[in-house]
Image 1 (cartoon, rainbow, N blue to C red):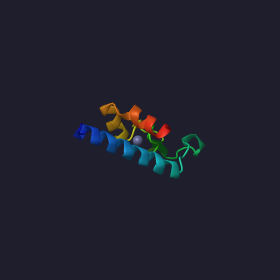
Image 2 (tube, rainbow, N blue to C red):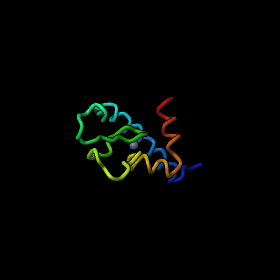
Image 3 (cartoon, rainbow, N blue to C red):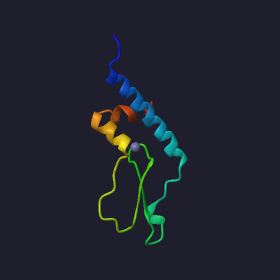
Length: 88
Ligand SMILES: [Zn+2]
């Protein structure tokens, strides 16, 4: 049976997720608690690990927990499959 557009989209989204995880592994993740007081705070996607935001220490609004692309995966219900695909 032919694959639907949605199935192709899911495969591509999962491929891109794997790429993000790979590139996030190459970047230095800054630990905010090790920075001197008054430093900007660095935030990373909780799923793939790419940098999401740099905010002042006294930021007013909660930082994003996921990057836009992982948020999209989550909304489609594909995030768990994506995470499973790189663990195997
Ligand atoms: Zn992400």
